[in-house]
Image 1 (cartoon, one colour):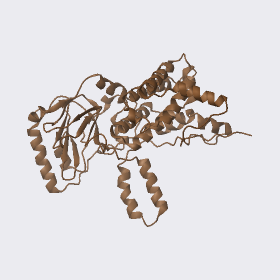
Image 2: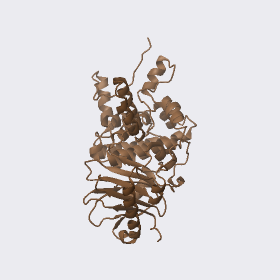
Image 3: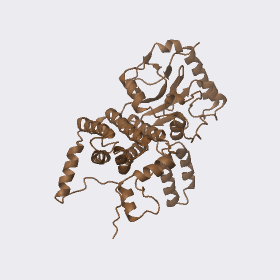
Image 4: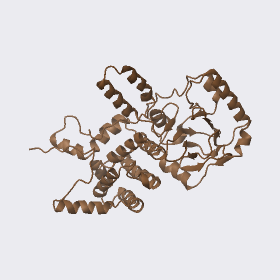
Length: 425
């Protein structure tokens, strides 16, 4: 039997009234719901949970024509098993699960069509023989009934939301550099998955706290290896080595040197597409799953990209020959605009820190000249912040200037990333 066209996601034995979703499309499951059909090729996220308030789980994938994703709900342990294309290969070789995780190569292609997805992103391989036999039988039944199940599947909506998803929210997410680099091997994600950076800090703290807790610490290494492998950088430590007092002050306030010489060159091998791709993925994990680790990473990206003052001013004044940087910042502002446009209003201040947004775009408003390529992009974001979130950056800037003029400037928030300013005497 031939496979269905485009991509098909088959949902088996899912409870009634669960909140199911793909990308930014949500719906409630019922007794007849069997999946989602006619999903276009490219990057997608399937997600599911009892409701949008509690724990949500999901699966990230880049799919091609005639791919079939199988999601089977196990009521015994209340977990979802996810398989791509071919379950029998999973049983014959449980250890071949995503051995593509060592791809740290530089990938300069920012399109989704550079991903060969003939592998199986399969779930855990620890089921006993009886469970394996049951699952293989289940899989045969599903494939035999796929034609009948197809009638009870929801069609993926191909509207302006799809164009926004492909062209602004995921266009830099590729397999080799982003998915395999950041996500757990099985590509399954959750509201509660932490980052490897957080896990590392926890393990180090336990090591310092007690020498008798080695068994407990060893158990955490499995958790460490299954966390999000976000690029690690500390926005509080952006000063160049052997800096003069003036350079310490400058690098603390202006992130241009750190962005170009450390974050971009060392962390991303000068690959801007990788940086923007991680920005996009962290945003999606933050919004669709309410994931804390992703929100921390996304906030850090907004903070550092919006505070590369010298670099942005040089771009605006056409004083740099690095046209790729101009494209990167214009693309960053365009992407952030569409991300904010999709961000639920209640997430502002909860997952995306209002203080960081205000400070970042107040800074951009001040340093980007009126007649420049970037000005239109900045103004579009400022207008959205005002109309959607009632954040008036111009009013904030005016109030700050007035307070400073009369010597009554006050800190309105506690900023964990406040720079250290050094004055030379």
